[in-house]
Length: 89
Length: 368
Image (cartoon, rainbow over all chains, first blue to last red; front, side, top):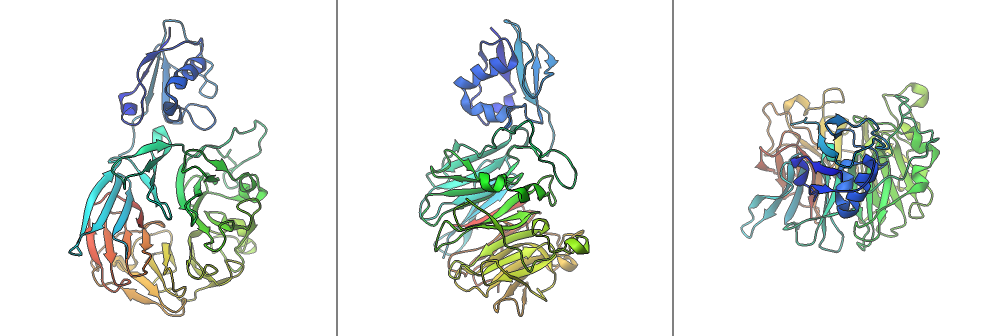
């Protein structure tokens, strides 16, 4: 089953435990994940369901290609890693 | 008089409290390290609200039932799905307007505390009837053709920063927008009409100077005891209305500068208002490097310059539009600056005491 991990920086703000989930695409995997951790959704996706502008999702170490619909496929033993660009002060 | 002042800053929420000896103590209240763009103490109740802008992680809203001792995240306003064929372009840059919450810039509660109103960037007005658990977009305003003419003033997108709720009839709602004028509804947001007649904008081509959608009122406030009297600190002047914004009169000589962001009006005296002026608009620091508050007691005919207790050596404190407030008694006035200064007066601005010079940049102050 795909495994989802989040940047430690996000754990400060909302519950987002690492977890295994179903789904053959990143969208499907995250949808299932957010059913268990609903508050985390708005920290990763914007109001239109796209990846937030300054958030990044890697699938097996490769940046997500479809940031609007998250249609990138993910293998059963794949890993989805959610993190953010570092900036600001 | 109010004995508590909430202070939203770039690095968290702070509270100043008056103790029994009359001294003000500053304390950390929450969200240290996170930008707090707006705070609200609901009318007639005890709940506090704090709007956060996490940047990467988006805009969030938190609520406290115990005076800030603990907080819970509640639903932030959410924009509806944007139709693929939506023609919604920023008029100045011709770029698509994101239907995505960028900032909570105004939070108000109705006099009975039952309804919350939230003004946001990129221009949506939301209401909640369940203490922030869920929000409904004012579709009539969002879908109004004039809304698409709004543009950002100092930010990428336009934002609603002022919400007036008529204490005589909470269905009468007014919003002020940078940049996008002043808009009024008599039916709780069902329909909207401009209220900018008399305002003019010196940054526009002459033929567009009175265009309602292009006015930049930095802040609009309403006198609680005389709700038809409104004050506006506009980008290029101070304006006052005595008929609920149907007609604005420009104040000819508003103290040391026409430029500034904040305005506060006495809750019972519609002729008394405070401002923190600044060098206009391409410079934005206190005139001459001397921090002053200006006050009128006669509806803007004359102004006093108040400086007792404020730094008169080179000082570069700019005061944002929500960072000036007056309490319900009309006696206590406070403001915070972009360089972390916080000042409070207990005699309508005659004398000021510095509560801190080392806060993070101050976004908003509110007496409760």
